[in-house]
Structures are given as C-alpha cells and as structure tokens.
Image 1 (cartoon, rainbow, N blue to C red):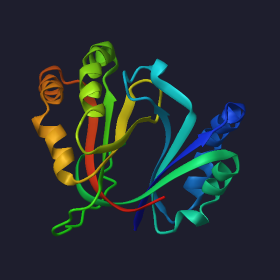
Image 2: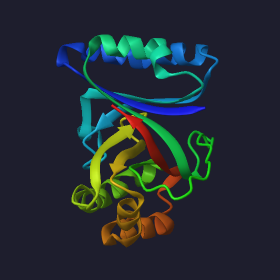
Image 3: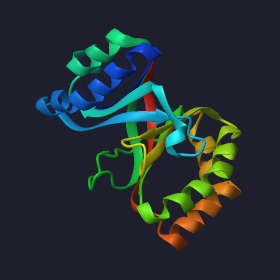
Image 4: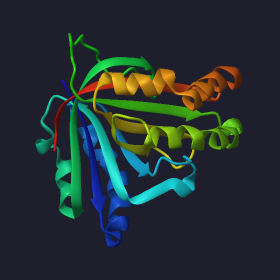
Length: 213
C-alpha cells in the first residue's frame, strides 16, 4: 500500500474547473477499488485557519492506494490544468488519533531513519469553539515558520470552516520534535486543547518522505 499527497497550482481562470474537480473527484476515487482512503484538499496560507486564509490557486489530494498515482484518472485531469505540481510519497512512522473515524495510516517501524520527514496535523474543531481556536493560532504559526529545519508548510482542509490542518516537511525528525515538544506557543495550544476540549476529532501523523518531485 502506498501513501501519496499531491498539490497542484493553477491559474485563476481555472478556479471554476478546480471546484468542479473537487465535486466530481469523489466519484472517480470511490469507483477505484484500489483506493483505501482519500481526502480531497483545499489549501490555505496556514496563518489564521479562518476562511480568509484560503488559497484558491492551490489544491491537493491525499490518497492511500495500491496503484502508482500515474494511473489515477483524477490525477490526469488535474495535470491538464496545473501549472505546477508537488508530489510526495510517504511512509508512516507514527500516527495518533483518527480521521473521519478511521486510522488510515498503517505504521511500520523504520529503524534508524534519519532522512526527511513530513507531518500531517488535522482536527475537526467544535463549532462553538472555532473563534477561540482562531485567536490562539497566530503565535504558533509564526514560530512554525521560523522553526529550524522546516522546509515547507501549507494549511490543508476538507472544508473552509471546522476541518483544518497542516502538512509540513522537515529536514529530519529532530527538527520536527523540537518544534512539537519544545516550542512554547505550541505547548500552550496543546495545553488549551486539553483544557477547552477544542477538537471533536484530531490526528497527528509523522512520515518518512520516500520520494518527492
């Protein structure tokens, strides 16, 4: 089983087509019996996680499948309108929590892995607590952007409101761990998460970056 995450950048004139692909994409992906899990993703700057953060020029797909992505029909459609594609093949190292009431990432031990890693954080925020959550995000994002070892980060979501997360790529596991466990703003948000019960569902997963282009 392979895990892929792909992002496409498009020109503004193709935004209506992107919305169409987000709608009909479910039909293509559900019809493909090789696919075990998928999420069609909108993206954002990852600065506030409010709807104003949305970036309508970049779209994404996370998929768990037996196939190479080259053989997925939806991938072929996106490539026809994309001006830029960024692809990662991922191997799960650890995963905690759930996504749509599933644990989609099958973790296999990787001994002495010292290469590039990626992280997915994802949460379904309780609607009555969304404004409180939004107010707490900016300090964490500022520190994330300035963290040593961070190569890239992008906000991801299945919906403009309430279903939000981050995909980030790091030079190595230590860089990611230093941000996650030794970063004061991040630790403060974790503390608030437990105190205020922000999330109806949450997931944190870490991956080895097997391939990228």
